[in-house]
Image 1 (tube, rainbow, N blue to C red):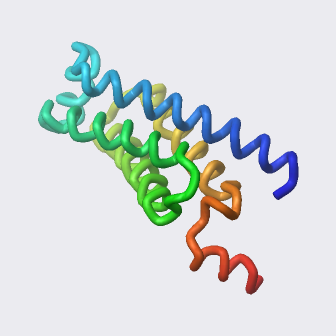
Image 2 (cartoon, rainbow, N blue to C red):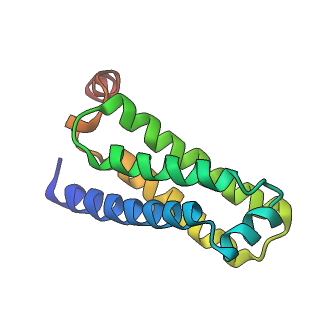
Length: 132
């Protein structure tokens, strides 16, 4: 891994972790603004607890070394959660500004996942990378 890629990886991963951690905490706190947003999207309020817990757990897993298989699940969860947020905002007619956060977190998820060090990849992905 080049020094440049390592720096980009850590910048993307730290911003991803901060974004997911902060939104996870806000969702667990069920602030008035967050409750209003989630109900306008058509979801029940209890989904905030589920999203908040999984985001915080995902952050822990992404930042921990090793455990590559669980790390893959965390990245996938971030990707599915944020693409679901984008679709939910589009379908519900939310203002375009509501898309910025989820789209940014999708980009950070993809960059962090793509540039993660070999030690953070599963054996299957390492073999595919070596074959190319």
